[in-house]
Length: 363
Image (tube, rainbow, N blue to C red; front, side):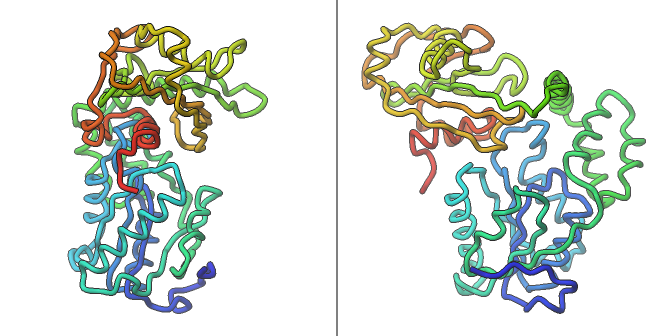
């Protein structure tokens, strides 16, 4: 494995055929720009891997990967834009699978540019916290780690933008001139006027209030939930969220575990409450194929949430009747073949739960 370095200057890092820079860029700010300029100085070709690429618009992921790519382009001179290649990358919530997908994507770009698939690559990054440890996992790539530039972070910028909803935006943008390129602020000025902004701002306020309600807890709370993936023939049972977080987004039925229930009992209860699915308990027990814990620290916007997902396969019987209940706005049997096209309309990691059990994306 390549050894991590913290170069005092670019002179201490050997040049490579390609530099890779990975980030979420929600939104693109001056810290990102500084690292991108380091990457461009190290190699003639720069691959920018844009994470969380196919997520639904949320307060944490408000910008599509195409919008983020445009922010990055606009921050650079035209001559340097030509050296950029963007690689959108979904969140697999499985580090080994994610790393393999990044590596294969970079290799495909190298080949398309007439370079060897295993050309010399330098990975440019910054160790922000434990979430940056993935930088050490790309065996064979040289790692160039640089110190943080300034104290700016994406969450601060997002909070500033959403807190300005319903108020004049210019004072907020004026306060951010030292934290983001002028081109990013221009982009935000136009983006702020788009029709989905009020919806995102409403969700941001709801999530903020939710977190504040737990702020006095002696320790950061860890929530335990249950979810159910129910298949019948070539369809899967989904609900549409009726309230924040994720109002209007698709999800698998689920909710919080009750204190006097097992995870399995809570899963069946939530399934019945949200979809009115009524099958005998013995039938559900016979159709249970797997139970898997999904515990990625960033899987939920509400905070640290661990869920126990139960997978039921009802076979090729006639589709049972379902009806939205509890806090669901809708419940329906959706063709499995349509799920890939719906990826950016799912709550949190629910598409990836479906992918785990149903094999929706290439492996």
